[in-house]
Amino acid sequence: MSVTMMSEDTREARTVAVRALEAEFGELINRFRRIITENANRVSPGMLPGAYKVFTTIVRRERVTLSALAEALMSDKGQISRTVRELEQLGLIERTPDPDDGRSSLLSPTTEGLERLAAARAPQESTLVDALEEWSLDDIRNLTRLLHALTAGEAPEA
Image (cartoon, rainbow, N blue to C red; front, side, top):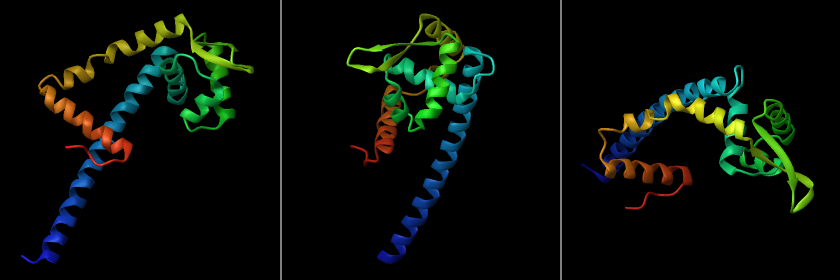
């Protein structure tokens, strides 16, 4: 087989493999969307997935300014501001003065918000652990390493 022919076969095989990976990511994204929608509704009936994402980002960051939150979510500051007001009205988050900048506030989850989030996540908490029950630790670590390289836009380390 010539080098050109092998190169074409490799390119075609790579394209087929990448398309299969894309399809699996699509299925995984759909599954996560369902979980997020269900969790959002358990936190507060009618909560939209976008508001849930804002809320969980605040929880993950513990204390964050509105500007840093908008930047982290790559969203319009005005839209994030409206969502933050809704989350405040629901008693899920609170604002406190930013000691480093008197013009700014820090957003943080309330105790009630943390409790409601924990209760909302509880039904799916073991889903991933259960799904990976038959996997070896090496396989789980390898998948994690490969996904990290993909999301960072880097070649995977050997």
